[in-house]
Amino acid sequence: MNNYTKIFAIILLMIIPIFFNSCKSDDNSGNNGKDTINGNTTDITDDNLITYLIPSPKDMFALIRNEKLAFSSDVLNPKTNIDKYLDTKTKEVGFGIYSADLAYTAAFKQTNEATEYFKIVRNLSDKIGLSAVFTESLVKRVNHIPENKDSLLKVTNDTFYDIVRFLEENDRKSSLSLISVGGWIESLYIVVNITKTYNENDPTIQLIADQKNVFENLILSLEQRQNDVNIKTVIEELNPIKEIYDKLEVVKIENPDQVKASKNQIIVGGTTKIVMTKEQFLQLKRTITDVRNKLALNDV
Amino acid sequence: MKLLKITLILFITQLPLFVSAQGDCSDFFKYRKPEVPYEYNDQSSSAMCVTGNNYEFILPLNKGKDYRLKFYAAAVFNNQVRFKIIDQSSHQTILDLPGESGTGAQGTCVLKDYFDEDTNKEIHPAFDFFPVTSTTLKIIIEVLPLKQEVSTDPNVKMQVKQDRGCITVVVLDKPTSNSSFK
Image 1 (cartoon, each protein chain N blue to C red):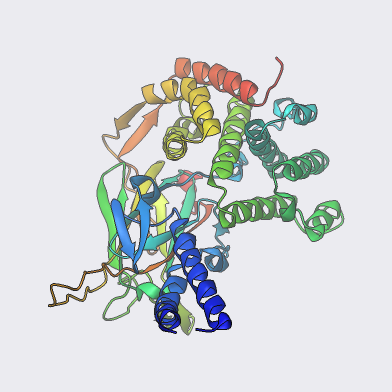
Image 2 (cartoon, rainbow over the protein chains, first blue to last red):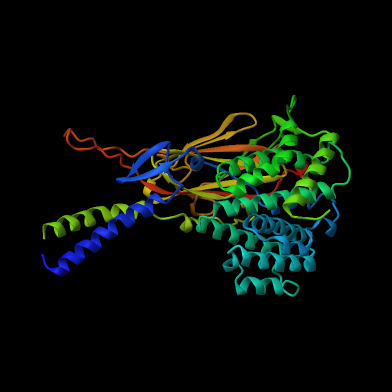
């Protein structure tokens, strides 16, 4: 065997393990135990078989837009708080919080505030490796909103879509989780604080109660990644909210209304309802405010 | 020379398998887009799946919106996927369909396009939901196992044959069209 042949053989032998390792690193696949995938071994757990889906902040604001709730800039996270976010956890949770503020200002067509919050979100994105999302064309779209037909809401929605896409493509699941926590807590904080009175038939009160389902999903998705110390800490910080939502009663609807759905629609729900009393609402309002202020490092 | 031959054989036979087993869900983002009058919902998600396994997506739905769900699976699965949706509030199975059906008619399968006579074009199946109260859907996706080749030779070590690919759940929504629920 000449030298060239030896070198070629060595290179080939070195390349093959690379393919073995590149498959092994994909943590999204599998079943219980260990499986052979085309001769390759992959670790599989229950966690990557279940995906808990979390709505983005725009969902909640879309639902309250028609409820005659007044916009209030008092509930926004102060812009100066950005300087307090120094570690990964506070930066990523803070990014979620400011993203929710941006979605709220956009949903209520507060162009000036929204532009300011867009700048903060962009600034923070640089610090958590998301600057690639904020392309020149996106920044131009925001700067030209007043004279263009491009809606503020569409730009913010597109931005959030690009952020999720970037994080998914770069397998940054923990970052996505922390951003989701920030986004969800800020959305709920805003809604409970702009809802001034309790009325059990108020759709906004019901929306806040219904967040029990979303919160359960959020916690379960966080628990899948609790070996990350930041996620573990956040789960503990959310515990006071969990205690309240766990106590909300799910009651059976005795005589459900006969509902006629549109063509081809499948009717779901309607058999049970989550009930929140006035005391529980007030307790939730205080607790959400407390937890949000801690996560946002807000001095109160 | 013998070492080179063995190495070459190993490389040539194994490489295509490893390449086909890789890949991510980036290509599936093209399906995650709005569809008038529905807006894109950020709960849309993709997962890398393996034949022979069940996957679950837990999806909360809000009262006040109409939802549309669409599913896409990697070609490697050849539509050999079964979809089941359970309404968690009533524990009722509200959808139980294969990826592809014999007739290919609308409402009989989840993955295979059907011909729509109204629009005169091929349409990807979509499923519309109207939540009367907020609820949670459990979407169970069963990626059917591949047929295994069994060797009669006791000296041949059996390898479980599996394929891997992406499955995407696209969630769309719009304000509810039912006036009493606005």
